[in-house]
Image 1 (spheres, rainbow, N blue to C red):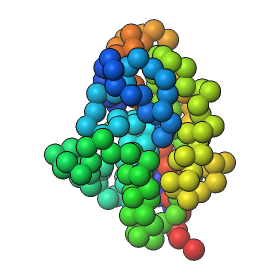
Image 2 (cartoon, rainbow, N blue to C red):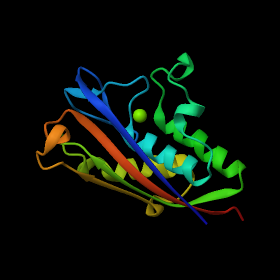
Image 3 (cartoon, rainbow, N blue to C red):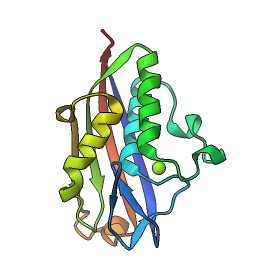
Length: 158
Ligand code: MG
């Protein structure tokens, strides 16, 4: 068994699409990012890479590489899952917390779980996503950013 942890944050900007956990969510503001800025996918990918000690997404998908401009981060997560499988592991479960002041993410969580589970090749019952606000505190509470923390457990491939 191997455990991994990942974190990601993006600043929010007017007029950018908001994509969280592979789901496009109606919002006047979205992440200011090179890719789609999906913090749930990025934190999850870093957790998988961390568990397998394979570096981080910045190493594998450098922002300097135009290939990844506007990239679909569910696809990046799928690629990372394949890398981890190539090292002889399977994903046992994934648990994510995402912080966003507005809009409310909870109605979108079931679809996020499906999208991530599909990318990882595991059932949605093995993917947990919790959405919370920052209770108005600090920069996140003022709606300046979106952040996610993820932990993953890997087991040996059968
Ligand atoms: Mg990111």
